[in-house]
Length: 82
Image (cartoon, rainbow, N blue to C red; front, side):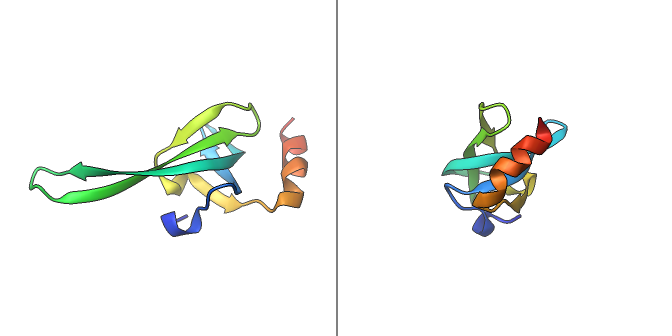
């Protein structure tokens, strides 16, 4: 997925470790990086909660997100994982 496709307070499936699990995006942060040639690049990372283990995780790349999970399917996906 792209940065523009990931929204706060939504549930997505994401690659965490070697599994694909549902996560809820809690917040999105941006920071700047200076390269060796003094160019400024904006980077983003996401504070999320793993809904399978209830742990807080940080996702540094939107490419780890797979798809948006509608609200009515969240509980069903958690039941499949257990």
